Image 1 (tube, rainbow, N blue to C red):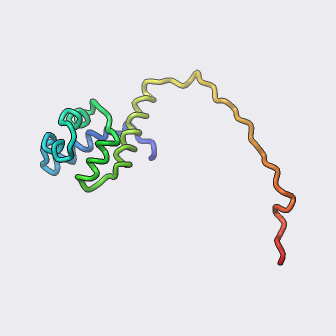
Image 2: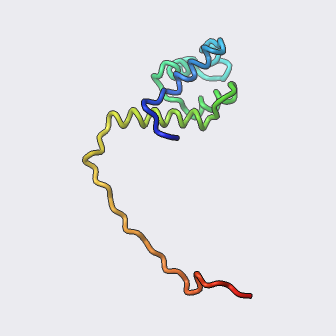
Image 3: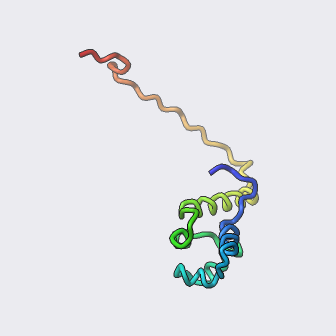
Amino acid sequence: MTNMFNPPHPGRMLAESLRYLGINPCEFAKHIGALENSVLEILSEESPMTPDIALRISAALPGPSPETWLALQADYDLWQTRKRVSTARIQRIEVPTLQRALPESAGQEVTQ
């Protein structure tokens, strides 16, 4: 995914979807076979979207795939981490370029 400016937590997006559809969050949790607290914590952005919940949500609602929900979570997590962690003092390790020797016949046309 592309870098966003302050990407939203996927729980916020799910909360908006449920609100739009008129679905009660506790009823939704029961519908997908998840603990109410787990869903409520995701909706309130207190917990991350897990693969288990992403799979269940995608099975119940049209729209984003489980992979998309998890990519949204990864974008959110990385953005939050970049705000907290400084990498300014970490030096990049230079890796030598490996050049493989090509067989002598490489690059020659094959005639039949």
